[in-house]
Length: 115
Image (cartoon, rainbow, N blue to C red; front, side, top):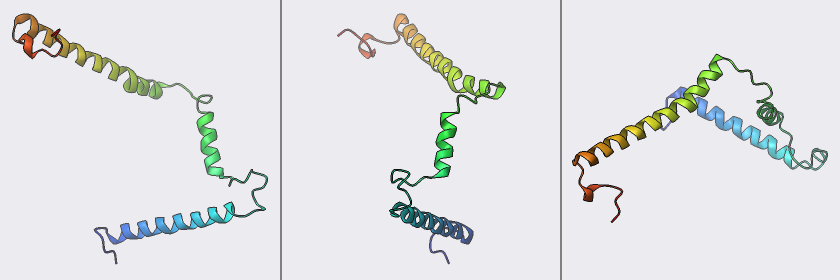
């Protein structure tokens, strides 16, 4: 029975994660404190999954294949926000300049003034 605001299934999942984490921690500590096992690896525990991830990140640019999906992602993540931000700044400054020139915005209420 779970005492918190979780369902039974969520409690089982959380308990399984805690048990798995404890198991991996015990295995890591066992391997880390073994004096004979890691003398060839400079005293570090060699993790294959971590090595695969690091190798993937290092060779990511060598195996990059440009296609329409990556092009649209680059346009959407870099170019569109830049132009949108530039347009918003231009619009805000143009309206403020128009208010200053027409006299709607008094000199003492302006943000950037000389005195």
